[in-house]
Length: 128
Image 1: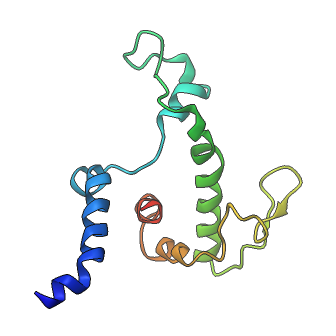
Image 2: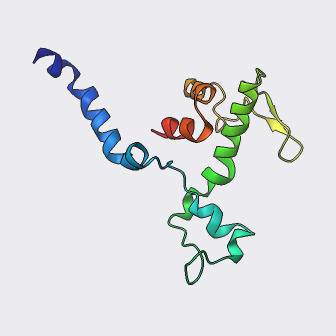
């Protein structure tokens, strides 16, 4: 009984994480707004995918995740897996500092998940 009183906040937080991310734990779905990619970008925009006017985008404000943040994290993970320090991103425009960009999160300790898990799994655990 004394141990339960001591660890009840951790148990409560773990329970809430499972409740909010039940689709990840029980269905294997990744928390990623991919409806935006299919509903807004060409060539997928030309297809209806079974909907009368095309794929409905639930929240267009999440557009940064599939178009910028996830590709940036994926590129950082690739560089870390190659044993290179991600200092510069030559893939956009003329290049820009990758280490100085806070959205890439190069020095974030949760990026270590990308070394051990697949990219979608690491993304899901990083979001949680």
